[in-house]
Length: 241
Image (cartoon, rainbow, N blue to C red; front, side, top):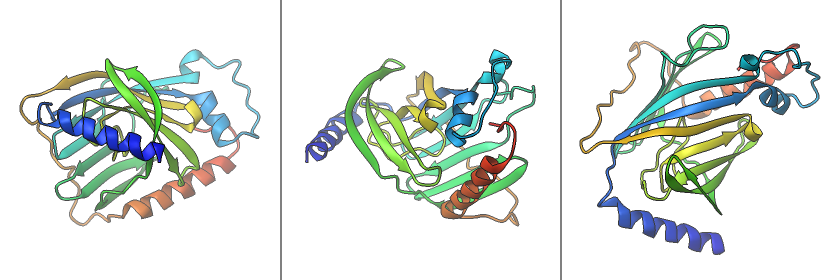
């Protein structure tokens, strides 16, 4: 009951901001991956000697950009700055959504395999908590989500003064913009570094792919990711992220 009252209060608060707030802009997120912590999260029983690792092998930082309007978003890595630790460019990872049409489109290349998702926007059942903190100059409230695909509890921080239900990567559905998200028990954190609002809608184009390309649903893609991660856990040696 208490959480219901809190959530209702948030909706009322964000609605009061909506008419006066800009609802278009660009957010740059920094993605910090603690490789050792990620490996331990995925395979807690696997023994790893990371003592001799270089710091750049233990911690990976990359950046991605979210462009948004009141109805559309597109999320992509910043290619010039997003390089893997071996010096190569990151794999393709574009997430597009259109709330007016209730559509999402993912174009993701994982370990060399291209997956194209064309489906309705998935509903994410968030639980808003009482925790609050500042992220990128905005007061944010916390919410958690039970990710059944990866078997983890995700923690997100959404801005009370940005009543836009978007966020980095595939994460969305809260009554405010997600400015920070914590995955894999802290093994990977997305945090907003710069927020640039615009008086006019930013240009957003839906990802293009060949008409004959085979597409899948969000559920089918999630099943593919689950299978891939189970296979990764069974492989000997260090896991790649």
